[in-house]
Length: 134
Image (cartoon, rainbow, N blue to C red):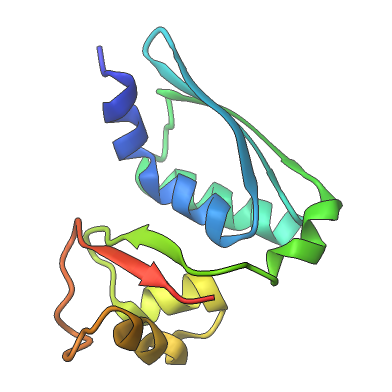
């Protein structure tokens, strides 16, 4: 049986997607062999992107029980982040893919590169922690 930390690590791209969409995680616990996630996101498009993240991690998501709802009061704050966020690079990521996820514009990858002192934007590796400027 997987531990809570192992399940969190597996579903980290989903948690990152919720945060990048301006959502909020209300609870993250383990029940038996399942990760239980309760979260809110600002709109249906955000909810769909979180669903895409879930399916990309594990199409069966048999070890995840989730309740993701839309809370439109989050919309006002979704685009007004205060300060930088962090993101853990996943296998297959590129700075442009991360920029697209956080800013909706892949061409903003150099903002992330500059914020992290990355000279060659093509040289990032899985597990690396990045600061994502607001």
